[in-house]
Amino acid sequence: MAPRHGEPVFVISVAARLLEMHPQTLRKYEREGLIAPSRTTGNLRLYSDRDIERLRQVKYLVDERGLNLAGVQLALELTQRLRETRLRMGQDEAFCRDMDAVLSLLGIREDSSRDRTG
Amino acid sequence: MAPRHGEPVFVISVAARLLEMHPQTLRKYEREGLIAPSRTTGNLRLYSDRDIERLRQVKYLVDERGLNLAGVQLALELTQRLRETRLRMGQDEAFCRDMDAVLSLLGIREDSSRDRTG
DNA sequence: TAGAGTTTGATACGATTCGTGTCAAGTTAT
DNA sequence: ATAACTTGACACGAATCGTATCAAACTCTA
Image 1: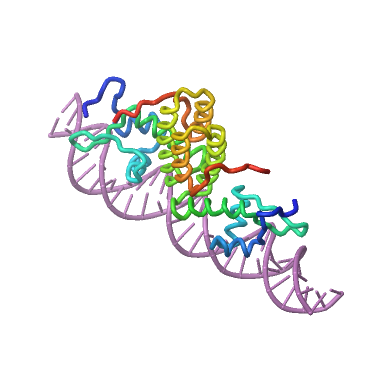
Image 2 (image 1 turned 30 degrees about the vertical axis):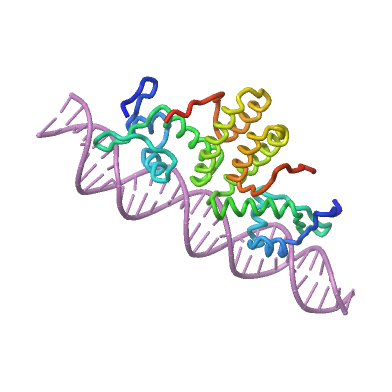
């Protein structure tokens, strides 16, 4: 998995600084299955832009909404499901407004169609 | 609020037995804003069928999915939002299937259109 | 390849949360 | 009235979460 354009990768210290999180927190989140950064051949974690964005959502849910990690896990599942549904029903204006409101409850700021490459 | 047909009310000991929960747990959930049973003039809690159903969802989210109460709060908000959206978009078959799948993730067993009287 | 700085996985600790137990005072129904 | 129940307050043990520490391994620069 070579790093593609628009998807730079960060080692854990850089990711932690970007997110204002403790590196140990990022490692714990990975152990809990909330995130899965890629690895170098030497086994160092490499966080992509998308990983960072996902972790920002996690941070919001934990810090602002007070969820535990089980709640975050569920929120992430719901986010993916609703994104897919929103994509499939993209032509309906009113529906998209509803769905964006729901996604914002889940900590998604601005989305409006997201490719699920990978 | 006189008890209407189809909405019997239970005192806390009965509700707790029905749900297999501790009465103190029900009181704590009320303090946290997860449920709001009606009261007698003597201030006794009275749980309706709808309250029981809601508490069953809470129990699922806590016991089976491991959410904390903040997570349950969010899940309940999402449930209401998505039920409303589903009602408004009721004619679309595929959408309803999607939405039911999402609602089942939130601990809603079988719904298929719910009136929000109150 | 040598060495300084970083990462990794494991372990541990304090704070917080959650379910439950207890208790005195008030309520309900016989 | 009196027996059973409910209420609100307080407290306790277990679990969770973020963080700290540490030795071993890795990465980068020279």
